Each structure stands twice: as C-alpha cells, then as structure tokens.
Amino acid sequence: LSGRIQLQSEGAELYYRNPEIRPLHEMPAEYRKYMLSPVADEAGFTDLLSPAAFKDWRQCGPGSFDHDPNSGVLTGKGGMGLFWYGGQQYTNFVLRGEFRQSGPIADSGVFLRFPDPKSDPWNAVRQGHELEIGDPNPKIPTWRTGSLYPFQPSTAANTSPPGEWNTYELTA
Image (cartoon, rainbow, N blue to C red; front, side, top):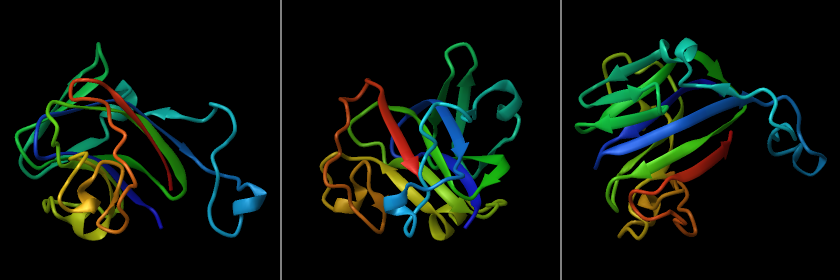
C-alpha cells in the first residue's frame, strides 16, 4: 500500500519538529516474510520540513499549522488540523521525528497511507492508519500515545511530561 502522510493536531495545541522519511529497500533475514527493515545507517532520510519539501504540505479542514523555519517547529492550532504531505507517496519507509504536547491530552497523531483527502478532513481517519498521540492513561486503550488507532493499543505511553519533546520512529 502507498499513500499520504499527515500530522494531526486536534485536542490541544501540539508541536512537531524534525520529521524525516527514508524509503525502505531491504529486509533482515528473520523478518523477510513479514516486513521490510530500515537501512542500518543514517543515509537516505529526507527532511520533510525543509524549504524544498515544505511547499508540498497542504491543509485540509479546520485548524491550521504555523511553521517557524528558524526553529524547525510546526505548531498545530485551532482544532482538527490535518496537515498532509502532498509530495512523494511512500510505500515502505521509516518515519521519525519529535512531538511536544502542550497539555496531558493532545488527541492528535501521525496518519499514514491514506488517499488525497481533497476537502474531507475525515478521509485520513476513515481510510488511513493513525499512530496516536494522546492521553498517556486513557479510558479506551487505543487512545494511548503510541497506539495504532483503533487497531492495536500500545502497552505503555512512555511520553515525557507536557512541554518536553518526545521522539517517535515508525517503520511501515
């Protein structure tokens, strides 16, 4: 499957920085029948907020994202902000970056493998996959940070306190 990548801000102000992506081209022997693996070194990552890449980001639905090119920080504001990358689509890849929550419950996430949302902000929710960024101790386990919403809850949120940066790395 291939599709778009999106950064979401919904329940509270959320900040992103340093998102990078690298296509995958090899598999380790023990996982060849299941999945592709990352390249062993740092080669091949693309900065998704570089000036060249930033021009390919799009906003869908209400909310917005502000980008500070000096700090590299992307700030989601005003509700269901769906900021998606309209450049290259990736099939197998490693996506990594950082996020910082302004409060304990962000109800946001990183969406993968969804079609062009056009004007429907729910398209990524209905047709993609979300790595949840949210409550570290929610009533519903799939709302926990690190969960693959709504399919698989994370075993623990392992998030830093609000105001501190967290890292994520996702292999798809």
